[in-house]
Length: 522
Image (tube, rainbow, N blue to C red):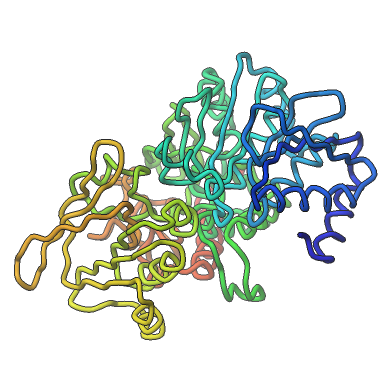
């Protein structure tokens, strides 16, 4: 099951086990059960602290296995064979059940231990989903720390009937005590905050008590991370307030040709950025959504940024690096059926539509790449492009048109998402060449029509372009003194990670120059 290289790496990790771990397998006669049995035996062979037992009489999903300690009947459960992106989740669960300490913040771990109530989580994931491991790992850790919390991570590709019965049309999807809890990427602190009702107020009070910063960076993507490093290197008081540290990078499957890094994946790149920033004295405030910017009332005064939870932070300079988000079609039914057939990520959600007919909206590079990816999984893909011809690179178009289960429709303006109240059943579009209304019966819609800058909170305060981008000059300055901007939320052309990082560094240097010319840093 595991190759020799992976076994060697696993053996090295399992040397960190501090107490015995028992893997309790519940299997049937399926091929998947045989694969799981082989995987568990490979794991057992890498450490004398691990034992494997089978108990096929348990009333649980088959195949599945519990990671626990001998003599206990609770722990972390996986239903399916956790390979692919979830192999890391499996290794972490083994270490945590085996007593290896978590690297999460100590106050967050204590907050989890103190949660009152019985919480039974179930997470549906796909092996190709790069967003799923964060959710699975967060809930696994919670179940290790608090005996009143349980978690089962379920491979939707193995338990397809459950996926259909519970109408799961996007991963990760989390159920709590049988009710839908959340869908999409969630961090540990975000999950805990949803359970701990007083967490928001405490967090706001903590932020309100902070002293003013010299540089406050709003946004934690490549631009924000680079700005933080370059500001902190100047020895000035630096803070980063981010809705989620990593930004769009967290949703990016493959990253190629970032200078000196030929290839990596988004979550790994984001984790490396955060480690780099934390090497400096930077105050990172995660899960903070900005709602307003209040310019300084006097020259050299403090700028205020307000947040959704009621908190506000003040700073001598502010760098806006809030990036962009997926562009919506803005047609009837789109929001109603989001996560019920309308989605954006083919890598995460594609396996849930195995054997079904789906549409991809958009004929640029991202749309055509999505269609090519999906064509290997689903029964049929229909690509709808607004323009008279596809806009993707020629090599991608040739690949797409060579696939027998792909249909391309150009001059197509999507007008409505159609559903039965619980899931997508089709879409309507207008043929722009003839004006005729058309409809297609299908079960999934993947929207790939570009990005919008996340700048709504700045309207009326900072000058924006007609596309909503922050207007900046060659130094990253906006029209508001002391306010700078960088990355995909700005008017800088070519939205690329390497460009965003460079602009973030430039904005930080410009902010420092502004500080030394207007007021002494704190």
